[in-house]
Amino acid sequence: DLAIIDRMIDDGIDQGTENRVSYLPLQAASANYFVVRYDSQGGSVVQSDTVELYSQLTQPVSPVKDNYAFAGWYQDPDYDLVWDFNSGIVKRNLTLYAKWDPVGYTVNFVSNGGTFIQPQTILFNQKAVEPVKPVRSGYTFTGWFADSKLTQPWNFGSDLVIRNTTLYVQWGPLKVQGLKAASAGYDQAKLTWSTLMGATGYVVYRQADGEWTEIGRTTAPVVTFTDTGRMTGTAYTY
View 1 (cartoon, one colour):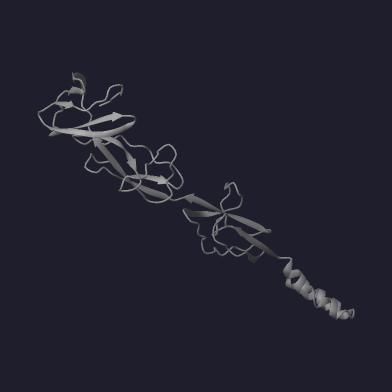
View 2 (spheres, rainbow, N blue to C red; view 1 turned 90 degrees about the vertical axis):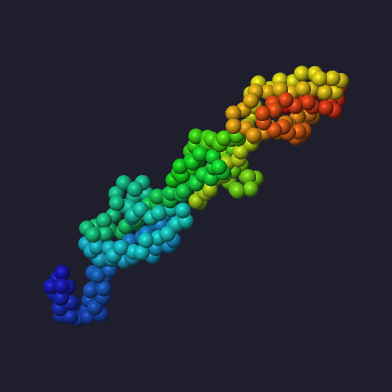
């Protein structure tokens, strides 16, 4: 190539066209350079590069993107052809596309005295898998919550994991079996139920007009309670 350019310059000088020929080397060089553009696909900006024909690219600093891990540069937006910086040669103007993999986050389960629940690793913006319900003697499982004060219920069917997450179990009193209510007078009802293995006592709740209210307690092994002060025409649930 240099020999050809030199000859052209010599010919130009012989013909008295020195000004025109002096631009030929610049024109020949620009035709041998190409622009490589980096499309970071939502990540941080990576500057374009200008490289000579048949040369290799210098791999740029990897871009960053919240909640994703950089997974390489590709020659197409469908990520079928990876670009190998060790062997790839530039032959044309080129756009390389960044590929991103979602970051995995840890979901921990605090069983608050119940059986241990194994942590899960969940990809960003995906749902955690509802675990087998933990067990605690004397209590019944009532749900998982996203805060230790148990004010934010976690819905495994719709809530998405976007960070490391800790879920807390809520426990309620274990319901007895065989509960029966029989009239014990004008405004009274006698409640009886089956003995619950391991229970040290019982809390009695009554529902009327949609609200649950604690109305008494007993100490094991007592399995009876008399509710007084009932009103005629009102339905009660225990």
